[in-house]
Structures are given as structure tokens and as C-alpha cells.
Length: 141
Image (cartoon, rainbow, N blue to C red; front, side, top):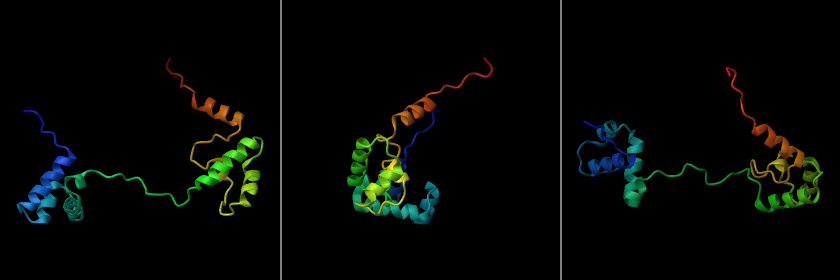
């Protein structure tokens, strides 16, 4: 006999169906489905508010980032970096601090958008590419 496959959505639908049929008290129903009571209440509330769509998984991505550099400042940094390719982060920071004193660290100048660094010096970009494209040799070969 083959294994019975069930998806998370199927289990949530069954949980909701059993809850509204009053098959078991909520505590026992949650125990049977392997979820906590607060999770059971969460699925019931979502179902009542949104229907079946409320039972789908939601993104866990944060809504915002409190320390993210504002877009106009990032664009200004990129413009300044292209105009002055030999300037380092500290010099760029001094220049932009007049217009945006909120920026506190020179690391902001190096990576205002995470790993995107179009303003990095060409030799630094080449070194980064060279170090990331190595292949390990077989020690037994």
C-alpha cells in the first residue's frame, strides 16, 4: 500500500473542517494535528477573515529595514563614486555628510545596497572575482 501524501494546505483545510463540525474540543483537535492552541486560533481567525486564501503560507520577509540607506543618497553616492573613482569611503562620507548628516559610518559608503558595489575600485572587483572563482583540487588525485 503506497504512502498517503498530504500537503500543509490539506491539513489546514481538514483542521478547519473538523473545527467547524465540532468533532473535538479545540485543545484535542490541535493536539491531533500537532499544532499549538495559539496556532489553531491563528488559522481559525485567518480562515474567518480571508477564507481559504488565509490558510496559505505568508512571506516571512520583513516589511522594511530601519537602517537602510535612502535611495536618493545611494544614487548620490554612486554618482560621486563614478565622478571620483580614486576617492575612498571616508572622503566620500565627508562630502555627503554635508547634505545627509544622518549617515554615521564609512561602511555605508562601501555597501549602501548590500553586496552590490558598482562604485568599488576596479582592482578590488578583479580581486573579488578571482578569489570567488577558485576550484578545489582533489587531495587524493
